[in-house]
Image (cartoon, rainbow, N blue to C red; front, side, top):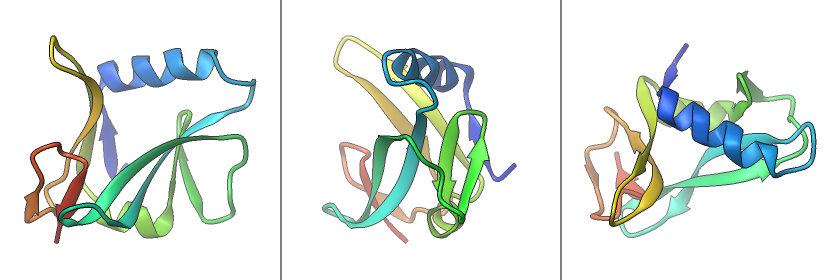
Length: 103
């Protein structure tokens, strides 16, 4: 597997998908933009594309997966925020919010 999903992240994904229509998936993708060049995008999808990789109920397109190689998807629930966080060893820098990064 090229991306690790922590138990906290998997539990939160499961909780989110319980509220969605049956057969929905949690998608992680990379798009150009953000303050550092690329940004992580989290969406709920009801279909899997031909180029998607499926890991449990998580889907990632092959291009995004290249940027996420050896990353860890975690979920943090603190007094300040509740958010998915990606620890990406491929990122050379990231913004303060953790949503965008550069290579």
